[in-house]
Length: 174
Image (tube, rainbow, N blue to C red; front, side, top):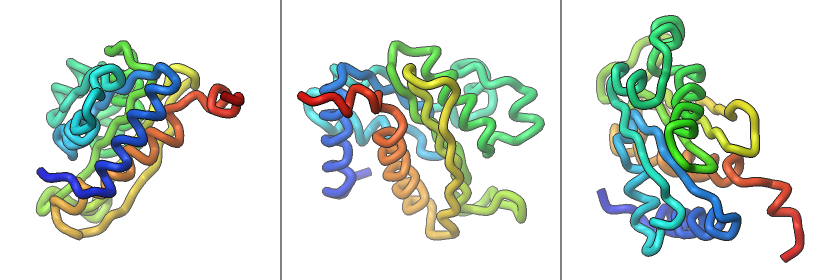
C-alpha cells in the first residue's frame, strides 16, 4: 500500500514525539495486517523508536504471541474492546516498548453481522506510564476494505499520540 501525505506526516510526527521522550512503540494488529507498522517504518530513522510489531490475524496468534486468553475471545469475540485491550497489554508485555497500540475489527467485505457490522473496529493503547489500556470503538461503516484499514491506521496513530506518551513529561518546559 502506498501511504498518502497526511498519513506520512502523522507517522513522522509520531516518531519525532516518541523520540523526544526516548519512547519506543510496538504494534499489535489484526484487521490492518501490519499497515500501522508499515506506516511507522516508512519514516527514515524510525528504528530507534519502532520496537516491534505483532500481526495476529488468527485467534491462535492472539493467544500465542500476545497472551490473549481463550476465555476473552470466547466470551467477547476477537472483535471486541476486551480483546483489543488484551492485545495492547500483551504487546506491551511482550516487547521493550513504552507504548503499544492494538487494533481488531471487521474490514469486510464479508464477516460482518448485525451485532458486529463491517467497519466495526476497536483500538486500544497501553503505555508503561499508565495502568491498563485506553480503548475506543469506531464504526467506519461499509466504506470498503482498503478504506476501513486506512481509517483504522489513521485512528491508531492518533490514539498512540493521545494516550501513548507520558503527559507529565510533555508538560515540562524544554
